[in-house]
Length: 277
Image 1 (cartoon, helix red, strand yellow):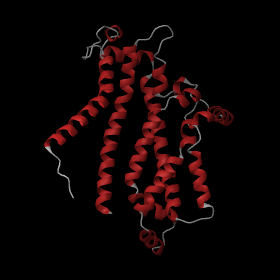
Image 2: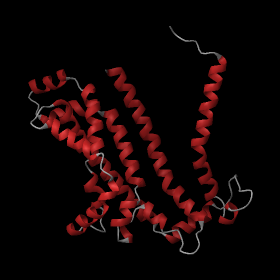
Image 3: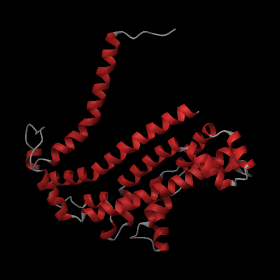
Image 4: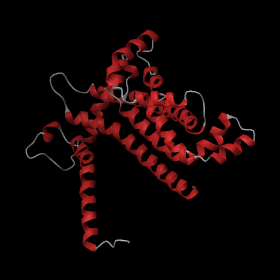
């Protein structure tokens, strides 16, 4: 029996959604407020909650203290390269686990899931030693190669491919003479677009915001990513927080744009998948 929602219930639902929206948006609003004021205005009592006129001054200070555009280009290279590699290898492996039988399949998948339980922080020292032995310290390779295949990515694609790709399509591809790679390219990828859009967006955000590992392995200032470069704006004895927040805002705006277009593509793919299947 269908329950009819009363006007009061709708009003309460919209009110709670509005409160949740305000709580989610406030940190971004406060970041913009801080980046448009001076540090002294930020510490004033009561604190200023309206926009100031110091945004371009703070941005100019950021550009004077770090090589922002070089660091921005480094971050774009790392994030885009990692996203493309993760989408390719994880989709190929996930599709294989979902739709093909081979010796040791279940054992390999259990081992794959077990690696998700291991704490990533415990392997930092060993990972750095390996990167140093390979001569990769100070380059982009430690940020890309070790993460181009993820257990979660394979698990996510495998779970989605199990129901999204029908056996009849794979059998029809075999009848047409398609090999494994061609079946993956012509049959699996179109069906996996919603899952790939979500995984790509998540991977890009992770690569863009990563701070700890780049701080350890990027010893050359010319190869530093944005997150590491912005942390260098903090002074030893004093910090111009308005400048630091302005740099954070400059690093966040491209990510918001990517998320906006990525979310739209994700919703479009989900809608197309719902109509298709």
